[in-house]
Amino acid sequence: MANIATFLFQHNDTPNRVLYRQFIDNEWVDFKAREIIDLARSWQAFFRSMGLQAGDRVAICLKNSVHWVAFDQGAVAMGLVSVPLYVDDNASNIAYCIQDSGARAVVVENDRIARNLLKENLKDLRVLSIKSDIEKQANGVENANHVLKGLDKKLEPFELLDLEQNTLATICYTSGTSGRPKGVMLSHKNVIANVDSCFQLDIAKPEDVFLSFLPMSHMFERTGGYYLPLRVGAKVIYARGINQLPEDLATQAPTVLFAVPRIFEKFYGRIQASVKDSRFKRKAFEKLVDVGWRMEQGKGGIVDHFQLPLLRAKVAQPILERLGGRLRLAVVGGAALDSTIAKAFIAMGLPILHGYGMTEACPVISVNRPEGNVPESVGPPLPNVEVMLGENDELLARGPNIMLGYWQNEEATKTAIDSNGWLHTGDVAEIKDKRIYIRGRIKDIMVLSNGEKFSPQDAEMAIIGDDVFEQIVLIGEGRAFIGMIAVTANSNEKELIKRANERLQHLPRYIRVRRIITTKEPWTVDNGLLTPTLKVKRLKVIEAFKDRIDDLYAEGVGD
Figure (cartoon, rainbow, N blue to C red):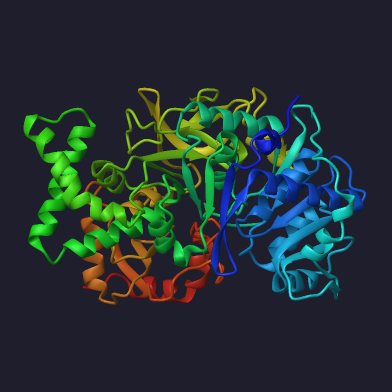
């Protein structure tokens, strides 16, 4: 028997423990365990008022907040199924997920989202808005705070059902870089098993402070930045937004961060920009990385032992102060991280733990540990996760964290999970010394017209390490040479080609960029070229630049 909501209700015994901090009405506000439980009780009163029964679906389309937690915990505690949705997604996709899941109610961030959603002609759906200018109800949109306040007299003790372990807890729609998303069915057992495995690694402590900024609708943040700290009783601070992240890091001084590689890529780019004009600063930083990494590997000499504290105090500390000065570790996932960047931060004294997973695995399959950290890898599997290599060196995973299947899609489920319970990840991998090394996607091998094959991700990860490039996509499938689409402020194609190819020297000689299409307009969620988890939609980018791509290959390489 199991229930995810025990993560919250365990704190009923320590009602004054501060679990969350959120920026409300121009000030930071702390929330104690008692307040979160009471808010979850209010949502439970709403669910009862609708006559919802265990197994019914309810959807969340909110920014990271205490209401997100309370709605989710209140729902799963009663045996309802929560359906998290991306607040930055377009109305059509949100509506598709609601309709596909059969959700009976959805709580959204604001009236604008609510109104756009109602234009999609969804039936039998209650739409509640948290940040609402509506007094009570108008045109199908209800003020969530008014609804909850009206149920104050109907509050009951927190309802926590003892459920069968395989009871469906949540349907998470994969953001997907192409096509319609699939609903991943995760049980209470799946979530609890994955959280408990992460807990065993001792990467979260009760005294920790997490800064949450990745969307909680994604399982990486939901497990690492929500369920795990709630499990241990750590405090979570909700960042105001990606634009305010640097300021929030500096002022809120978190000790643990769950992030995507892009955050550290950009920060590393700023470091490089700040030292490039000063030979002294550049050499000092290079010395720090050299000595620090050697020491982390246990290969430091007597001189290194004396030099490292001084280098970290004089060079690393001012840099780390911009991250708040208290970060003791960062867990990075969701995409590949350049090991050069990871090693630099590790050398500075900030362990970056590169991990790997997918929504279908709830999501963590493997992660590096603070001891024995090998940034080129994604670490050993979690304690209760088995891994092996299948046909074409595809990574397979099996364990209590593996999904029940895809919602109303038995065919896709059978493709993803074989008869022996192995999840087929679609990633090509290598396993050495019990560590997993991801080598690319099985389906993402690019073949040039001359038959040469390569993984675009490997080359892209190398190129993006040069801070002149903001975002890139390599092209060349079925073509005579490799081209690139790049978001960059630099429009000098020859210079960009030279810089890109300098980053590819470790790859076979035929993997070289011959032409580049440049643009200054970033790829964003709003313009449809990034997923809500900030992954580039490769096919969408290629489609958006189709005419320029055709012109580029018609022109050829030139001189």
